[in-house]
Amino acid sequence: MWKRRLDGCRRACRISPTRGSRQAPRWGLQIAVFHRGTLVADVAAGLADPASGRRVDGDTLFFAASTAKAIASTVAHVLIDHGALRDDDRLADWWPAFAAHGKDVITVRHVLTHTAGVPAVPADTTVDDLHDWDHMTAALETAEPWWEPGTRLGYHAVTFGYLLGEHIRRRTGQTIAAALREHVTGPLGVADDVHFAVPEDALGRVATQVPAATPPPSPAPDSAADRALPATIRPDAAYANRRDVLTAPDPSSGTMTARGAATVLAALLDDGAGNGLVSPQRLRQLAEITFTGHDEVIGMDATWAYGYAPVRPGHDGGRPGSTFGMVGMNGSAAYADIETGVAAAVMRNRFDPTDLTTAAAADDLTADAGRPDDARAS
Image 1 (cartoon, one colour):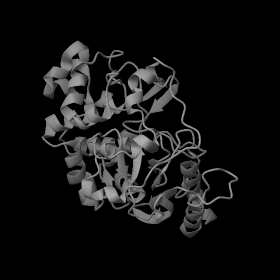
Image 2 (tube, helix red, strand yellow):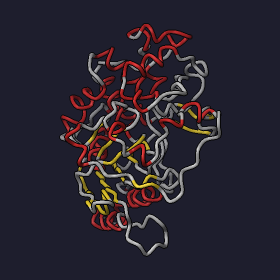
Image 3 (cartoon, one colour):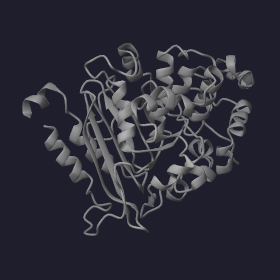
């Protein structure tokens, strides 16, 4: 079964950036898949840097945008499972200045479910500001909630990472990056493969993001999406290639390999020997649907699990209560499925928020793997 699917992953790695094009792809990607704790696919193809001709290999790092939110949420769930955090910790109990304007009721649960009500950074925020943790957290201290915390949902594109990271820092004494390394990636052996901020000595491993043929659409001026994510820090290929962006300590985005991201999500699943990164009870909780309704920022209906999107990028969309993960706006994705025991990640350096076909094609190859009917078919 997995040999056939691995061959399919290799074929997915040869997808042309433009359907029907006869030209060789000028970008690259990685696909990694685990099943019940075993790495069953780890493939790479294409160019990491079209200018130099450097090719993608298994160790190439990719800017993964919001796929990193799945990693940040995993850190939180591991800390909660270890007793270092609580779901209903009020951030202001450890961060008194954050209590201003009625934010004293905001909890870790609100942050993880994007219901905290503080989705926006100041309109004049710059990339330099993203480097300055104290500046960003001070901005959150003075922010006024857009809605009563816990009553509505709105995607916290940038503030998610600073809210969660500052609570972890104040509650545990560790930065979220340090907690990631100590409690997650270090024990799993992938500390060099998953980063919120890329170390200087690893920048040479990062793939160059290639812009889409057509620039991505911008939100309507002064819309909720426009106000939540100002144009000055709105990601595109040029933004993702900036050294200062890659090294900024922003847990809302990150840089990683497909193997590293898939390793982290696979470790959340029970491998059959009771070796999950979290308890079975916590695993079920993080996959449960926590909110369904209108997204006040994006302007469309949305559903969230507990810190993750409850869907996969493929055509069947996933199984609510079993599937969890995150998709990045540049076309990267990382997700897991409790029912099938499959965890997968796709990284690419073609920055096109309108095109998730690469991740969808890879997901379609593994969507039903591990289910009883698949076993019979193999």
